[in-house]
Image (cartoon, rainbow, N blue to C red; front, side):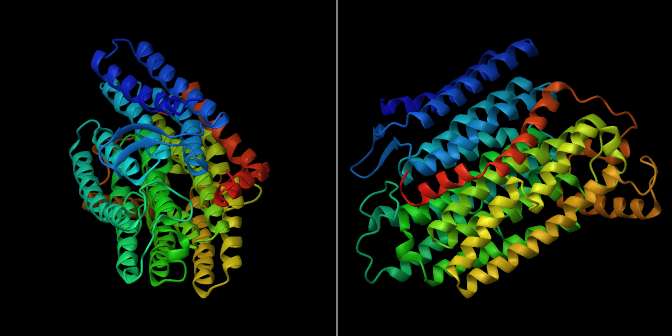
Length: 518
């Protein structure tokens, strides 16, 4: 089939989202039908392309001999695009109910839909220039989503996101220039494209570290993670988009691309550059988990959990082996499923019960049983309880570290285990409070009040909690969760379990991708 079919799922949501923003459907139903039609058609196109993968590249623009914008669907593209195409329709359905009372729904869903196409542009990019171009477009299109509603703290958080992103883009651009100068092509080629590096090894290794940290801004690598918890001021559909599907996964995917397909593991393996980026990943794993344990605001707690779990992916990738690449993709898929589920559960509690802090979850399992049943399933998977998908991905990361057998790999394995233990603490605290409250659901102990005051003070200093998220304003009424929220959560919980139980074909596919077979 023609490679130019790749352009359909790229530009359909971009143009469709733009049209929704321009015509602004007057009825909510018309807007939802339009968004879901575009989203489902895009996902159907992606599924068809994954099944009938084009063998050629789709060239759409050539600026110079080595500078071109083109798309190609290789094995790595299939992994990222498949995750995005699977989750986006579910995310959109959930967002319809979450945003039903919002006065700016059309604008929100316009940018939300365009983000789908731009994310697929990163997945389908055939070379570094194309990926970098869509990577920057992703920053621009998510700015209106983060500052939706134009609340003061949302604007502050967005400015922080932009500052971090621009700085990261500058570092990543240095890597782009280095590959253009010292590689025989900007195309992605498993094994790398560097040619004669004699006398330039140290310089290129410095550039590699800079490029990883640049792309690592979106992957929330310490110390460039600060924008991610601040992004919790955005509506939950956006938060989940940033933390589980598009933005952070784009950062992790870009690091895998430049490591395995641009610089090449044969050039990097055993160098100080490998151990440096591995060290950043290991530290971030533990740091994010510690911050999550201390955080009392539920969405911010999950944000720090994302900081930690993204570095699982980066640690596996920086092992620079086929097993490491397989494990990195496995956790990319697993984390996407688990984290979007957890964020959507907390988002349902926020919008339906007006509860935002950990201590406010007392007794909520009995009042919102479906929501907290799903939260429990996804939370146990994130901890790594078998046979769910989180256990599978962590198992393969551990196996890859043991197989490499170096001191750095074993230190990383230790960090992985420590982070997993800490994740049990911050996940199970919410689960236990929800199902086994120590006191009546509406009673607040003196200790909880003290924690509330401390958390609110910290949140005010960070300027990260939106004004409408004050627990003091929360009333006792809990509105029923509608089917547009309930159905996506149930589907996600089923996938979390089934992708763990029947993980063998998925892992085999990922191993074939890492081995260059697919």
